[in-house]
Length: 298
Image (cartoon, rainbow, N blue to C red; front, side, top):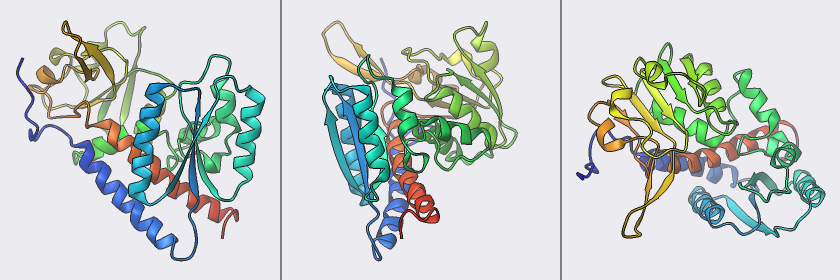
């Protein structure tokens, strides 16, 4: 198997985009902290889950680069729903808490949507509360879901004007697919959303200027499913194990072959993931501005 060159100009460098955004966030924090404290981000993990620990560590690194305090809290897997809501309500009332991050997955007895609803919209730096999702419908995208917003940021990084572009979103999850579609429509794109009941995904994706994929299936998107020069944003993260027991992380796109047709493509890893962390930090600055406007902080 051949290896995709690291310096291939068609690969969109998510780490470079992350560095730019975190630099902008750091400049904001340094300016604000001349007069006062910007507050801290609180990460809530319920139960000890390895993949959640990885997410939280990456976010902690991003926060450190941005100059924002990051408080990682691990709650026991036996914690009750009402206990969680009480603790979140206390954080809503704490002026030192800038934003609240509810890590997923959570134990089966926890209603994650109910807890997301308990997070005040002005502290919802993940953009995942029903109120935040609802705002996107009205094109208020400043506190959007981080992964969805990262995909839009990467499309913009190609230099293409999103107005009028044909975009196909493959996957319609509440976390990524649906919010990404609304964000893209807010930018003026014409969006088609495909899902597991779509009769022919390829029929739609072949006419698209941009294809965004989030289905959780390794190498789902093949080279014959896109038109030449298209932008391909791969949100998938899948772990594969070979015959020797070696693990590798791949996306939802057959990158090596799609690269021969696409004009731009995000690698996995190194594409959407790093940008998602930086969007979370940018959301924190938006939360700070809105809390200030609301009179919560000076």
